[in-house]
Image (cartoon, rainbow, N blue to C red; front, side, top):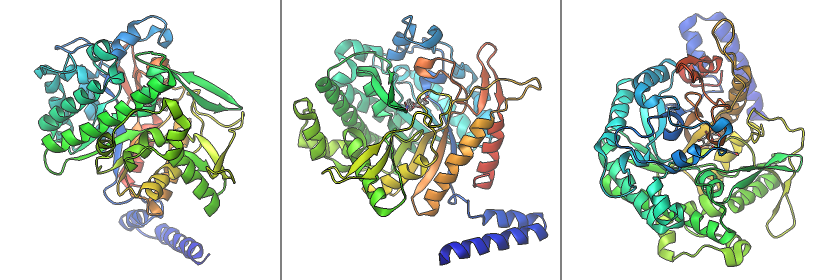
Length: 493
Ligand code: PNW
């Protein structure tokens, strides 16, 4: 009570002072605003190679499983493909200039493995590396810090053909070799690496298909490349190989990168939100979080599969060695989480697991993507859980954003009022987390530009910048102006 009273009084004083003082002091007062993010906060935007680059078979690039998957009629809405996408491969200079214009001080992009090693392993393709070298130089010259993701799902097709992709441990080893190669060649300018993006999405989507709760007892079935339908036992083994690939890559990056290179993963952790903010409910949500993420986040941060996970999977449990567990839990410099929606609402329960999930209501508000359950609180609880469960010292929000039904208005502008509402609401919760001492050091909005949204093709637009895919014309949206102002003032605006 005392603290709340003091804060209110301080806010009132600030407001009063700012009403009477000249511009410079007003700016000072704003900087003191209680909605400030920590000093040095990274305000970034994100993309991934297959979703924006195009040039799918240029300059020696090998095919990826997404090239193959999208080329097969019926897999993608409207049979869209990433063959051209945003043509970013040729327009990266314009795109970096636009990022600067919209106020981003950092950029999370991904490297297309088959550009670097067209066959997955073996001989490197110098032209592939050259593209990322030029991109990184352009970013540095614009004062934008590059953050590189090494795997955002575009596996070299050869590795799929040779041994079933991530069904084989050989893919995990090949991934580490490629990761080490990139760290060696870009590590003088790229200081932050994410190994793998969204383990759950590409493993479950690609190797079995997965169901996500959209409220009212309904689930939505989502899939992706390579489009397999494995059994549960086989799927758990793929999960294991993916986290093993991450661990091996961490070691390779440390061995071959420059001293001081920082590394972590970027996972779309399942996020349980406590129904009430009381200690018992928060405890229940933390237990749910550790449990629901046992297969990826928990094993990478704890170095063991939880007893409940092994019991639950039974005869379908992955086969693993203690050595592999050590590798999987190689020490990290930060934890990256992609945060879009709560996965469940949680209450305490007497059952041994200590929590129960409350159904998501049928009328729950959503954003445009049919899976996108709207709740800003998840951007508070996700990093909070990561800190309280695993003691993370540094956390990045590697993705957050939403699709919206954007159109160009008569005056040539794009008025994405719902995205502005979404960002303000979610970032208010993120700021609250940082104010509570959760060490979040950066935020990457998904996405810099509208792009190829996987099985939804070009229909679902996530960008701060609108892209006309016929002419490749780029137009910053209303939300881009919002983002620039928030980044400039390092606060929620
Ligand atoms: C992420 N869900 O995928 C990916 O990392 C991006 O490449 C993608 O464009 C972006 O989010 C938007 O979809 C997700 O069902 C796919 O909750 C599905 C879900 C979340 C993220």
